[in-house]
Amino acid sequence: MSNFRDTIVAFHCAGLSNYDIFKKLKDIKVTYKLVYNTVKRYKETGKTSDRPKRADQCL
Image 1 (cartoon, rainbow, N blue to C red):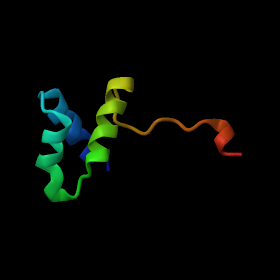
Image 2: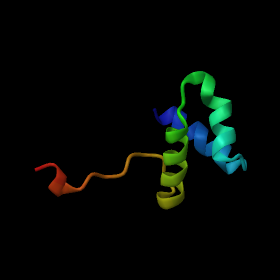
Image 3: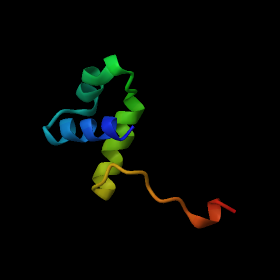
Image 4: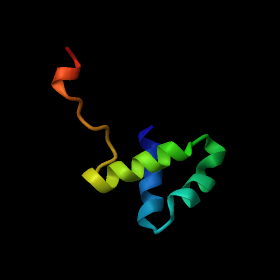
């Protein structure tokens, strides 16, 4: 999964739109939702890793 995310961020930094990234990666079964959420997470946190879970959700 991380390889997909790194590729998506690389395309995003190169100036491609979410839809253009989706079209390029559609052949390897990447969904538009994965592209959208990865770019959103990267803009918010600057990382492609999963967000930490809240402790009270684990109880």
